[in-house]
Length: 254
Image (cartoon, rainbow, N blue to C red; front, side, top):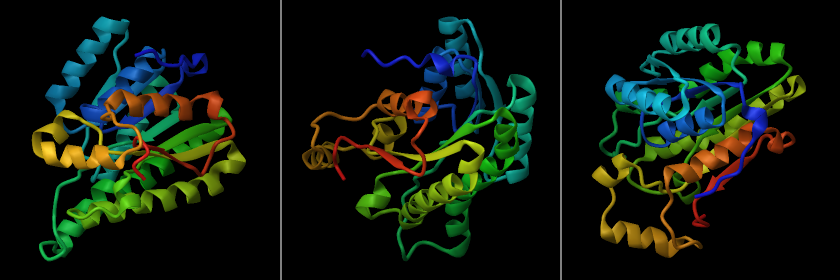
């Protein structure tokens, strides 16, 4: 698959949450291939280290990995600070990490609700808080918050997750308005059902996939690279006047 090239991304410092697998790993690969200086956090050290080795073999450069539970805000912000020390002030932040654990209204207690929101929404605010000063000093930057079309469709089966993903749109617009005078852009990147290894292992059935494709305008499954290509665009100067928007990549399902 041929993808666009964005030379201005070369040597940019990028910080990605949840970069060890799935869509996050595709982000790490894509920005490393673009010549960016990439740092990422992930819970799974084994997968993250394997990814770093693969990228080093392919590109000759190694992304900077730190293990982090993003629900620990102090640890997350410390990782961002360490990344900036290692690769330079962060110009591009991608808030990607999420957990789409299935649950029901009746089965949700306050602790489980807090865990979902503390994973799927709260870190986005505090990572943006941490990078803002450095982006101002650089003269601008880009924040990409990864949402989900589950919030647009109102899908059942994980109401707290859907709530968090809806909140990402509001947070993105608020960040764009507050940080815009400093030439810092904020956009949401909203995937549809991406066929990651986790999705295939846990949720994809022949019936569910057929239903999804029937609802899409484009009758192809969505892969991680489709989302990474959109992130490259949003982070590049090609999108320099795009902010406070939600770029939906779901094959026309919504």
